[in-house]
Every structure is written in structure tokens, then in C-alpha cells.
Amino acid sequence: MATKQSLLAASAACISLLLLLTLASSLTAFEFCDKGKDYPVRVSGVKMVPDLVIGGEPNFFTIYASTNKTITQGKLVSAITCGSFHVHSEAEDICTLTSCPATADFEVTHQLDMPSTDPNGAYAIRMEMFGENDEELSCISLGYNLTGGLGLELNITNLFIA
Image (cartoon, rainbow, N blue to C red; front, top):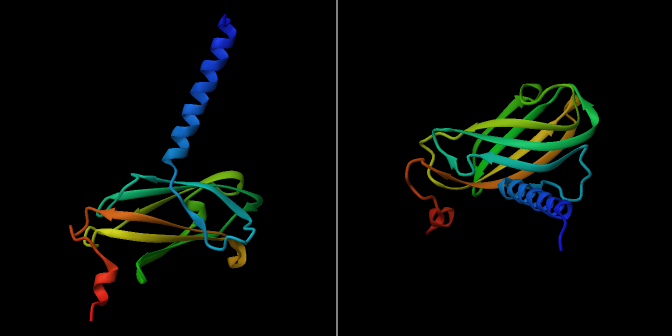
């Protein structure tokens, strides 16, 4: 017969597992730009809020990262593409997106405002983090779908019909 203590331990383990699965399922898939590179800043996860990017409304990307360096200045450069077309890029002071100096584990929250005039469809964003003297600290890319734009579905392959 199970004791009260063993039931409590099993319950706590189940709750921990559920919380871990909930966090993992809310993270967005991403890739490092150069999979073989040992970046000074290691990204462990990215969360998009809302998880569906809506044109004309604020969308937030939170990057969960860690480093052995002390980051006192730098920038986050974001470049958005749709297929092979450049849509938008911007650079922001890293210290406006996280607390500086950033050390050990830290988060970077970036607001992305896609215009409501952009067509619905599949987009990609590349986020590069640079430190002092433009040293590349990290680089990730991820895909997302834009909705709420012009209401048009954009299919890049149909743009090149002869």
C-alpha cells in the first residue's frame, strides 16, 4: 500500500513534469545561423507572444540565453524575409531589451510590429546579437506565419509564373 509520503512525491513529480511540458510546448522552434559555431551567447529558447504573429498588432519575442561574458553594450539586429524577399530590418540597443550588464542567464525581449498592410503568409526572422566592437555574440533564425495583414495569402512560388 502506498504511503502518504510516496503519493505526495509522485504528485509533485507529475506536477513538475506537466509544468516542464507546458513551458516546452510554448517555446518556438529556432535554429542557430551557423550550427557548428560556438557562440559566446547560447540561446536555449525563444517564446513568441502571441504565438501567431498578427499584422498591425504588437508581437513579442523573448529570447532565453546564457553567457560566460559580461555584456555591457551591443545591439540586436533583426531581419525579416518572405521567401527570398527582404521585408524589414532593424537594430536595437541590447541594453534597452535586457538589463545590462547581462551575465549568466538572461532574457532579451524584442517587440516586432508587422504592418497590417503586409500580406498573410510564411515569414522568417534572423536575429543577430552583437557586442563590443561588433563581435557576433549569437545568431538565430525562426519562421512564423503572419495573419491579419491584407487578408491575402502570399505564395512565393506563384510569383514567378512565366
